Length: 115
Length: 440
Image (tube, rainbow over all chains, first blue to last red):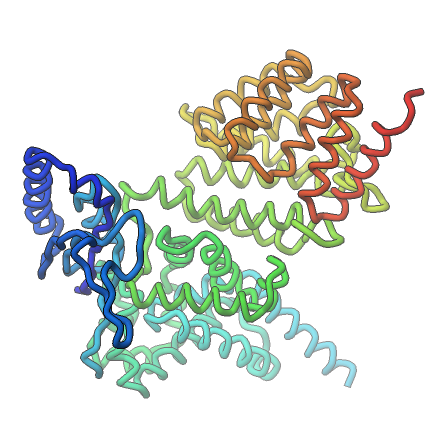
């Protein structure tokens, strides 16, 4: 099994003005996703939702600045760390990951254990 | 001396022939053992070099592909056994569902595997080497790789072209192409793109990507985007060879047959697309008696087969269109209404503005240039064909036929500014001169 990160990029504005119902729907969708990963034979090792980029602080060298590292329309809003057999399996799982206001990026996790 | 030289030539020719015919098979079979593309490539290259010497001494083997595969696989296993660190780092290309074939294929971590393979690696296993060429093709054309990387990898790994040759074919520098190939191979290994033919659910999309790559190879060769020669014959032959290979490996896929038919029918006109001076000739100016009848017959038979069963795909439909042109006794006697209907079907199967443009050109033959111009105006509004040289060229031709010479000259000029192919540039320049000359 190989580890992959599923990075969720979405338009933050869509959540900023979202009603409680929209939030509720999003939470339920992610709950369903967690179940589907197991059904697909993968495993969720971790994952979090992030506060919006308005709360981000960037540090480059010693310089601390307000805001995210790169200003983009669709920002990183959360991630999962999963285990899958190979890229095709990881993509099959990632296609189920809710991201109604954007999309997801799949990145293999680097094995730094040496050997 | 002379006899030796002749024998040497025969061996050289046999190795060159095996390179052309067997490369994909040898590399695909070796990749399964090596579990790493770079290692597999290196071993296969070594095997071809070894063949020059061995075949000079022992004679050319009855089955050169099997000889090369056995040699390359043995080298890969030796390398893996020598370098345990390398082995432990190679999760690459592993196909978890590989059935044990009993031919001495080692399982990961099976220490006895390589030694056993080396000991038995001889004639006995020649018959059981699995045909992994499809796995190789699908790996090269994986959707997680950029299209240009898919094309480069296919030429490199499936056709055995060198990086320098691929760079020349696509008019980029060799370091650029080398970087492209390296990046793609790194992604295959780091992201763990596996070496397999996709399952039934993914197959239609994945096969379409493969066929698109082969078709792109063909069109790149057929109309070289720049330079002196309109046709780069080698690329064209490679593409047709690849399509035939995939068709033989996937006999149930009608779209593959459609692609073979499309390439054959288009290529049947190869020698008539330009005159002796290299000037581009339009379909209506081409000498139909020079078209390759054998290719047309083969292509037309494949079209019938590809259309059978309903819901034809875009390659089968394009092939049907090419067949209608190829079998028409003259440009005037072409079955334009039937073509218009086929283009309508094609547009439904493949809603592309390029198809819409082609349909507009056929529309002109059925309903006249005015209605075709109206269709082209709509396509222009869509904007997706901005910078596509055949749009102003098609428009210019319709305007010329309507006698709107000033507008035609402008449109030809627009097309001229968008093309780097010298045969096409000459053609457009001649047209501009024609419509700019005083009428008479």
